[in-house]
Image 1 (cartoon, rainbow, N blue to C red):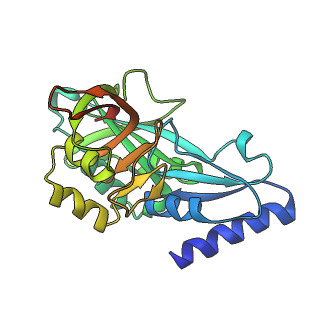
Image 2 (cartoon, helix red, strand yellow):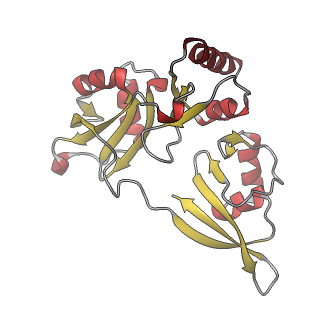
Length: 242
């Protein structure tokens, strides 16, 4: 991640020296984790087009909390739902990559009711609207959206789960129904993040309010212990995004 660290340092120095806000391209979870670990000479904020986005643009500058991010949302929907294929996240992303667009120009892609909502940098939005005419073999039309429509995102669910301890590997195993060895592999592969930072410590005890992301599985907010079972196991509460 040396290149990422250098890029973040350059953006923050430019924002400080020229007294204006600078922006990165879309960052993945590893890059966001790297950014969170740095001691920069100026503040930064993140936005990915909607609350809770995984891929985000970073703004650097004294007024970064009030910045207008260069992020657009494009609605990509079949021209004829009746004759459209079942389209997935991979289908939408593959079609965008097929246009020669770099991955860092694209943020999250939310799929709902066979329609894709593509977060992208505003400088590439016009190109996408003009050139994305099909996803797989389905003809699509594209247009800018002001925001994600209501009920597009799945509503997170609060769950109470019995666990042996509050260790993070135990929680990941229980919430995603993994064996302890499978959960361990996620940590070893740098796929577990706590508040946007990579966590390699299997025995980490999360604090109430910590946001835990498990790449490929989802994320949850830890709400802490709510009680014990008759067999003296801990009952924990978590808000799970599925």
